[in-house]
Length: 77
Image 1 (cartoon, helix red, strand yellow):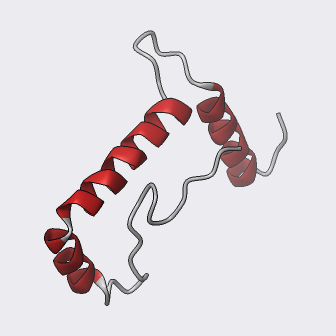
Image 2 (cartoon, one colour):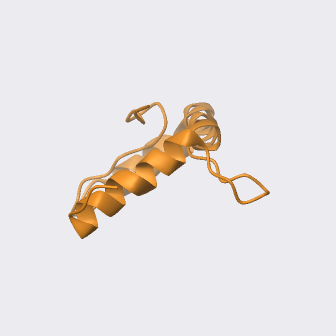
């Protein structure tokens, strides 16, 4: 499965959000980097986890749903 990468496709914050203000300040001062990450994240999800206009799913999206359904329901399809 294709993996999403921190600082390439998304910006992470600590679970308690204690670093959120410093991240906001950093990316407000580095807008080109923020845009690069945002664009890469958008493209990653659009290419790999897309739901098409006709309602069909990309193969990665199908696998993601099936894998997570299996985990939640504890069954195999």
